[in-house]
Image (cartoon, rainbow, N blue to C red; front, side, top):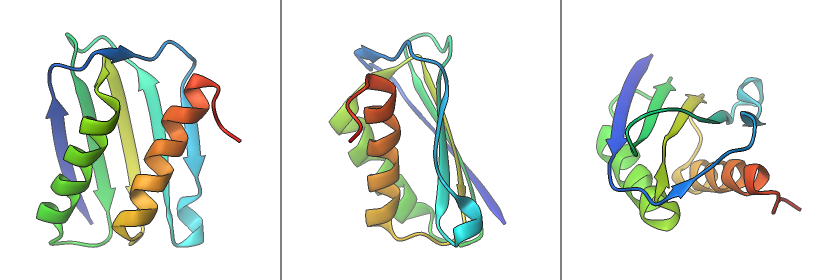
Amino acid sequence: METLNYRFENGTHRLTAPPEVVGVVGSGNLEVLIEPAALDGACSIEITTAAVGFGPIWEAVMRDFHARWLLADTRISINDMGATPAVVSLRMDQAVQTMLGDAP
């Protein structure tokens, strides 16, 4: 297992809904927990993954996510069992959309 941590500053969008979990880690996929947190305007992301050695790919996916949403005062925890970057992006977007009330 590997744990990766990212912190993005200068977010502009604050979520106020209760914490939300999307995905199921036991399915061989991943789960995302997203919650409001007092982080001085930052977005903090912690990833625990079984796929060791993919830090640069995770960083690219997290940077892309942050550029799309610009979250501030948000904590995100990801438990991964080898999901592809496309699935990671989908689940993260789904978590934000669920908190915003925009989920299908």
